[in-house]
Image 1 (cartoon, rainbow over the protein chains, first blue to last red):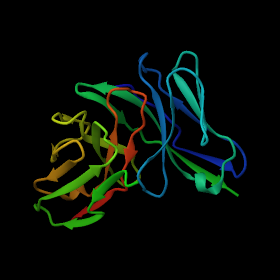
Image 2: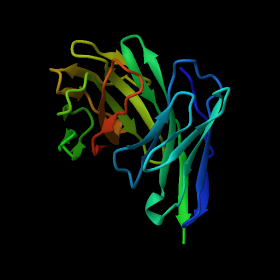
Image 3: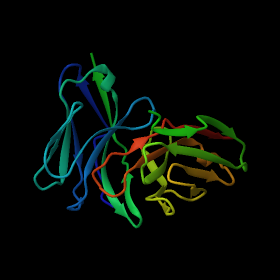
Image 4: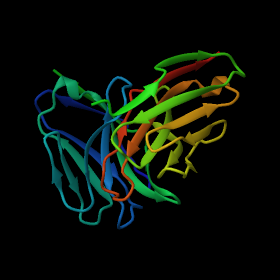
Amino acid sequence: DAKTTQPPSMDCAEGRAANLPCNHSTISGNEYVYWYRQIHSQGPQYIIHGLKNNETNEMASLIITEDRKSSTLILPHATLRDTAVYYCIVRVAGEYGNKLVFGAGTILRVKS
Amino acid sequence: NAGVTQTPKFQVLKTGQSMTLQCAQDMNHNSMYWYRQDPGMGLRLIYYSASEGTTDKGEVPNGYNVSRLNKREFSLRLESAAPSQTSVYFCASSEIIASDTEAFFGQGTRLTVV
């Protein structure tokens, strides 16, 4: 299975952009990169995903390098409510279908 | 919309007791998953079911069994609970055919084994 590597924690000032990096150097050509976040031990919440093109939605932007070995999640204007654990995940194919394998994630602390 | 519903939300067991964690989704998804999350850790996959009638082991299947009862329901059973199984358990569901669809998670079951 492809693995991801993220920094254990990051700080960001409120109102500034939060840039969360992720390395996935063993990713295969057909594996998507997903980002989820988890607030206060609630169930993880989907943020965004992509294959090779950059993606943007109402929550965030995802920048994937051309070689697909790394990506960056961008929260353009971080708020205190964005304080959470952010997970970068590669969805991999198992014997009976796709599955999500989580890493340790990055604790993002947004400070006023 | 209910999404993914887990029951119970909290449970305390004595060592050696058995119990079944229930999960149901109303999004007509094919794939369902069970994860556990220990304090300060990320989620680890226990078992998953890519479609009705199939199940497969994840990273940490020992001590657990699963049943995909129908397309909506996926249960996780602890036959003989141990303190090491104290954790928060999350169920999730997603589509199977395309690999570019998101998974939806329940709110978790907090299990303590004493």
